[in-house]
Amino acid sequence: MNSSFTTRTRRTRRVALPLFATATAAALVLAGCSGSSDADTGDKAAAKLPTGQNIVVSFISPAPAEQPAMDYLKATFETQFPGNTLTFANTTWPTRTDDYEKSVVKGEGTVPDVIELGNTDVPTYSSQGVLTDITGKFDDLGGADLLKGLVQSGTYDGKFYAAPFYAGARVVWYDSKDVTLTNPATLGDLVHNGTALRKVDYAGLFLPGRDWHDDIAFVYTNGGYIAQQQDDGSWKAGFSTADSIRGLKQFQQAFQEANNDTVAPANTDETTNADLGEVPANRYQFCAGKVGYLPGDVSLGPAMQTSVETLKKTNAEDIAKDPKYVDSVCPNGHAKEVKAFAMPGLTPGTVAKTFAGGSNFAIPAKSEHQQLAYEALKIMTSQGFQDLLAVQAMIPGRISSSVHLPQDATSLEAAKSALEAVSTPAAPNWRDVEDSKVLDDAFQKIAKGGDVTKIAADLDAQIEKILNAPTKADG
Image (cartoon, rainbow, N blue to C red; front, side):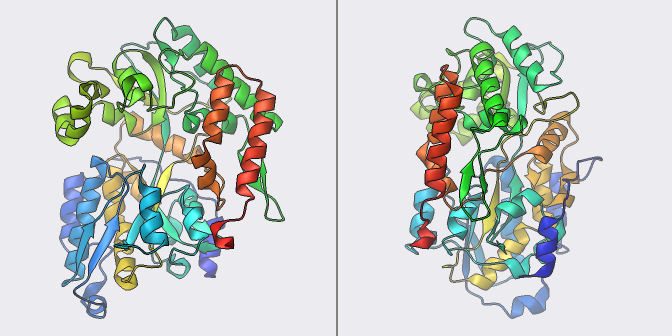
């Protein structure tokens, strides 16, 4: 293995926090199109590569914030490699597993040349040998400037398969016109404030029982963990440890005392509520004035503040299915002063350990255009591409690009949260754990007042059975 890769993936690094104002997205795009991009490989390099090829890139449910970077990718690639084109064949979060099983794993239909993978999905594919090993390209793709957590999620069995795209960050949203309490200094204070805010048909702290992505923060912050790999390679689950039990009991208290079961029921997750159909429950309830504190992804606030006019253009199909979808944004008749803070830790001045979301980019081993696919990947990890993500308030996978994050309080709070975020176990069978819904089921039972110790023991047994089962790579 590349020795510099080994050293750099073990080095402790911090995400650079945005400390000064920088160029606008428009200026960055213009700079990228001027031909001086750091991803430029030069005419000689381009001349050695094939022509007449169409490179297919697959993003997962790309948000509007990603569009400037996607435009930059296409324009830069087609300028640097004349005679070739780059097109997008995107998938969605609900369909990605089936889509990639057909194309990436089985090689059926059109195999994309570069794909986005949720960071927790990477081990599933890298363990099967269906991703191209890019360990030797680590330095070329950014090396020490790549976000450590996403490098780890892109690494399997000592080899690098998936480069960082962006990091997810979770914060706590609130309406400063409605919630006038001083922001909580500790996780306990957050539960206390939420309890004080709770009233009839109003959740002081929005915590659906099956929203394990947010609920898990209570476990992580109290020192608990989901599972750890043992020296013999097996996996040992950790929900029954004393720290995890303490976190689960704090979650149970928060659900029963600060949440409101009529607003965020135990049998729902953050976006799904049978009474609301396909309307995002968290956004709908917040915009309806039924939520005090709303834990969620950093993208949630901007989504709720989208104008109705824009929503009618971008989500016309959703609105046609259910007119209530227009109430998933907060402008116009129910405008709010939406603000956010990093979920606090156990002691004042600390930050909670939340779920580490995000995505990576990888090249399918079955891609027929390996050379040009790599050149596209190189642009996607370049300063130019990553800067455009940061300008749009997405936490970039490249550390130096984080100085381009907006200088607003929310972005700063999100960056603080991302520094402390914890990834799920990098196990080949991890996706099977998520798909099995054992986490969702366990948190639902705890929310409803179940015996925490027994539920945790049962959950550990289920997780260990899944993680220690033969993988697809084992045949």
